[in-house]
Image 1 (tube, rainbow, N blue to C red):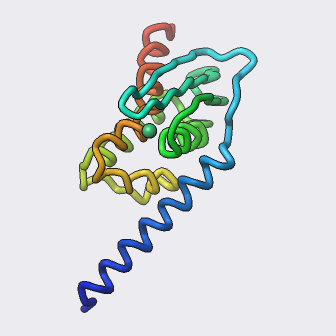
Image 2: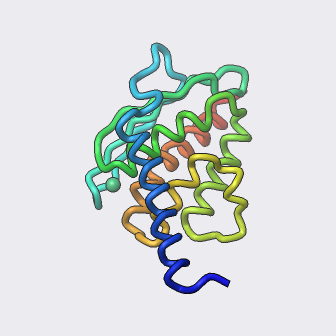
Length: 156
Ligand code: ZN
């Protein structure tokens, strides 16, 4: 049985690990830029924090072949956008929608989600305690949701 002090220290260390992953994506963002011929482009902002994100997806035969983002703002918003582009690459539209639902549920406090399936995205769940920061972390994801909705409407 761990004493309270140890538990508290572990939580702090866990937060450190989360912070490291988020900052790593922020400093070395994957898939930052734009696509030559995106299938869908979505832009949004989070006025509470001043975050801006532009998300571009290239979709072919119902599969997200490539994804890019641009933007500015806090480390959480930009790291989340970068992680998203990594996570959705190679997913079908249906799978991407499921990932969105799972991530959104987990970050808004649903404890029943199996977070192990989220990979690096799990690092973002550290912001759950801070409602304003949840908006930072979900900005890019709302754009994904909008993009998927648009693609469903335009698909044959
Ligand atoms: Zn932010």
